[in-house]
Image (cartoon, rainbow, N blue to C red; front, top):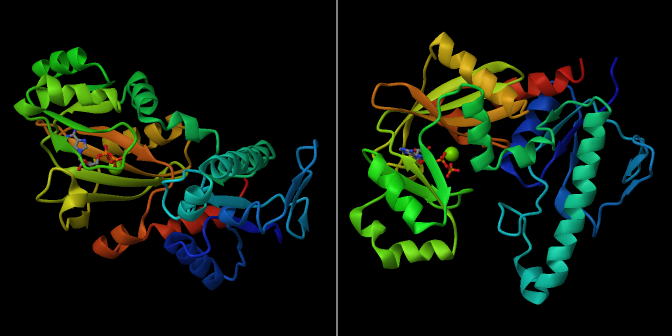
Length: 311
Ligand SMILES: Nc1ncnc2c1ncn2[C@@H]1O[C@H](COP(=O)(O)OP(=O)(O)O)[C@@H](O)[C@H]1O
Ligand SMILES: [Mg+2]
C-alpha cells in the first residue's frame, strides 16, 4: 500500500480545503493540511541542498503522493492572506516576509514536482497564467480567443475600439467586474486614467457563458452560466450542466495542457456565431458554489486524482 500522504496546501479555514479533507476522510484517507499562513511564524520548514531534503514540522523527507495547492497566500490583497493588521503596523517588513514565504514555499513545490509528485497545480504554471501571456499561448496553439488588447496607451485603445463591433474592459488580472466600453470611456480625461493602471480591452462576446472544469486531461464537468448581467458574477446566475461538442472538449483539454495545468476551471464565452472563445483558465478555481447550483461533482473528481497520485 502507498503510505505517502496527500498534502493539501491551503488555509485551515478555507471551504475548499475543508471539503476535500472531508471527502478524503470519507474515503479512508488522512490528508495532511499545510496552512502556508502559519509559515514562518508557527510552522517549521527546513530544506537542504539535496532535492528531497525537506522537513516540515515533524515530518522529515516529506515527499507526498500528490498535492492540492489552494494558495500560498503571498498576495497581500488575496483571499484569506490575512495580513491587513501587520501591513498597517509595518508594510515593508510584511512585504519582505511574504516574499520570503513565496521563495521558500514555491521552491518546496518545484522540488516536489522535480521528484515526480503530481501537483494540482504545478508551481511552474503560475507565471504562465498571467493573462496577456496565457491567451497568447492559447492562440498560438490554434485555440479560439477573442480580439484583445492589454494596454495603458490611450491611442491604442481608441484604435482598437474603432475596429470592434462592441468592446468590453476589465482588469488585466482581475478584481473588478467586466464593463462595456461606452463613448464617454474614450474621452481624453477618462483614458488618462490608464496612467494609474493598464487595462484589458476585448471584443464583446454576446453568447453563452461556459465554465469548464478539467482534471488530468478529462473534462470533469461543463456548465452553462446564464445571467442578466454582462459579468455573470454581478447577478444571481442560473447554472446547469451541458454537453460540450467533442471539438470544444478537445480544445478545453488542449488549453489545460498548453498552460501546464492539471486542474482548472476555465471561462469561455460564445461569439455571435455560437463559437466558444477562451477568456481565461484559473489555477485554483472555486467549485463549491457551482457544485451546489448545478448539482454536479467536481471535488470528488479532484479527490480521485489526488488518490491516484504519481503514475
Ligand atoms: N469579452 C467579453 N465579452 C463578454 N463578456 C465578457 C468578456 N470578458 C469577460 N466577460 C464576462 O466577465 C466575466 C469575467 O471575465 P474573466 O475574463 O473570466 O475575468 P476574471 O474572472 O478574472 O475577472 C466572464 O466570465 C464573462 O461573464
Ligand atoms: Mg473568470
